[in-house]
View 1 (cartoon, rainbow, N blue to C red):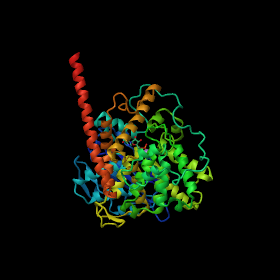
View 2: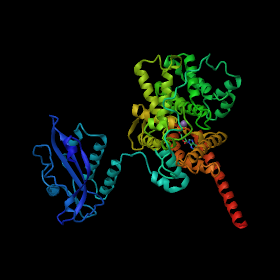
View 3: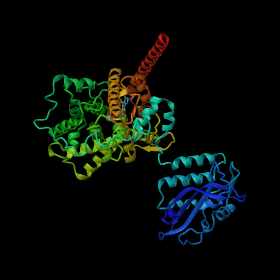
Length: 574
Ligand code: 5GP
Ligand code: MN
């Protein structure tokens, strides 16, 4: 506490005090230095109130800290500050408004001049919030005080937006594996052996990066008629990207990219020629591994198409700037480039070069963004940013990097929850085209503020990235098989190399794919798309989503029934 106060920082925490009865209790306490006009610590405001669940610690006098010996800065006499023992501090507050709490211990009221703290220049937003709640506690019914105590406890957590992983983990094996597999940094469970030897899988950090393709770039005009017909559907949700993959010889990103970039005027915005755009799209598409069953350039094309589809919704058109739109489609195109077909947790467990490079944090997402910029800037023939003024380039880069990093699944609930709490709107109606919305709390929400636009853009790419369960059933099924296949390969490699098996349910021989889909939808999709639909009005997706969910559920039940029958049969025969 004193270390903080001396540095003019506020401190909050628990400390032990001795009651008259001799009992030692633990109380919540805060010390807030107040800076005077000379920028010195003018006074220190101490507050303390019994924790809602007061802990009586018995006679442990020795553990009580004495303030007497503390080396405090010399402070002017101040009615809120007294040198002395903690005990004398608590006695001193006796003349302030007090109340009884459940434990029969005195709760100490906040000081009337607490308002002064709000003018402090050193206060962090969270300190401000906590202090406001303290003030509210002064004027609220006794029954509300313990609730606000709990609120403060929650606010003190540093993981404010990453929820309930424990609750989810308790549900069933499949759910907990999803949560562990997609939302934690390294694997704690299922470790078969110690650490694997370093190296191995993953893109080598110092690998030589591909140069732009030589020869004339491919263009829309030279594309086959069936490709041109197919990409005319680029604005419809049921466009068949898998068919485009087939007829374009695995170049869906190039053709869909050219179409979408041209419709959005990306070349004009960047002052860059069609040729540079073509070369760039080819270069990025080359960076995707066609050997991955899921994370290949078809997934990138799929996410790009979904992103552009979202951008065309009225609410989004009214909210985002041209720069946002251009940044969004570039981010979608690059968002999984050079993906090795293994998850972040796998790479961390395998101590792959990329994991070491990024310290096990957002390994792949950092790599996708870094790789894309590295190859783009490496040669003028593919540098789509070459003609942008530096400040515009920097802003655009910020948007792109932020969006790519937002696809990291450990941050899934953080992004969705921030979006919901900041932009929680009543249902969008046709006549409501204003960019100022009313939140459910009655506040006006300025969608055009850069913070809110950032939240919207993160939701765009996040929803586009995991929108495959909202595609028409045939597409949805193929994507589900592809992601399962990629996970199967990972599980096989983990077993071969003696690495922890991150998601054991993704075993080729035993996996119930329909169940894996309903679980994924339950945890990551349903709530996310409810929130997204409420904002972006994507009814078509919601209809597919419900139909696909019903389909997977009936398939999962079928598999479960067959498995039951088989078990019964084998019991019978033995
Ligand atoms: P990405 O790696 O594509 O940027 O992030 C999205 C992640 O969500 C994928 O890696 C994958 O783990 C998960 N995901 C996306 N769609 C599906 C799906 O349909 N089923 C399952 N099981 N996982 C999915
Ligand atoms: Mn992706």
